[in-house]
Length: 189
Image 1 (cartoon, rainbow, N blue to C red):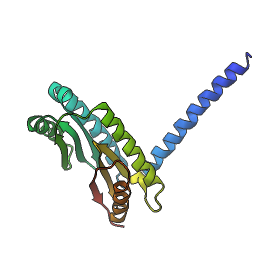
Image 2 (tube, rainbow, N blue to C red; image 1 turned 30 degrees about the horizontal axis):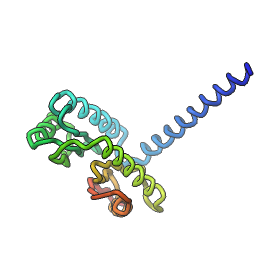
Image 3 (cartoon, rainbow, N blue to C red; image 1 turned 90 degrees about the vertical axis):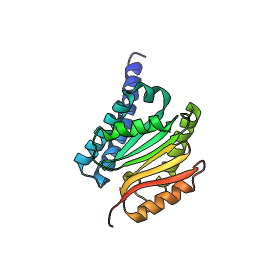
Image 4 (cartoon, rainbow, N blue to C red; image 1 turned 30 degrees about the vertical axis):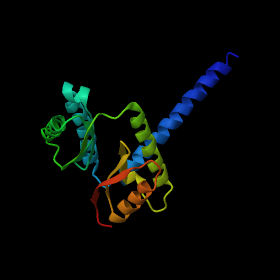
């Protein structure tokens, strides 16, 4: 029994390592297949954190709104809900002040923040869209970010037009998707 417990502990730890190796491999594949330079990828990730920090530094935005951002190739997609245009505009100005460099796509809706149930459903929709994209022949999902907000699916990426069209078709035909919004930048084949 004494040798069985350490052996079981080692096996459990190795299972965690296998998962970490798999996540690392997928992340590495995404970085290699990404059309952006490594510096741009890192800048975009840093900008994501800076935006989240800047938005949360305003108590009114943090407590009354549900706003987040996704950065791709220095372009910012802002999504969520604000109870009024004053707070929505404040969020936009906050992000503009960061001088990230690209265009800001304002997709913040005026209304009450979504419920926990709605956000959970959005996560499920994102998972379904990504899963369907993975099984779609000819679609390189490593170049496309899928973000769902209140049933609206936003597709973000630096892709060829044919890849964008295929991704939109998959998303549109996924149960629970109310609307698909493309926020793509196109590269030549």
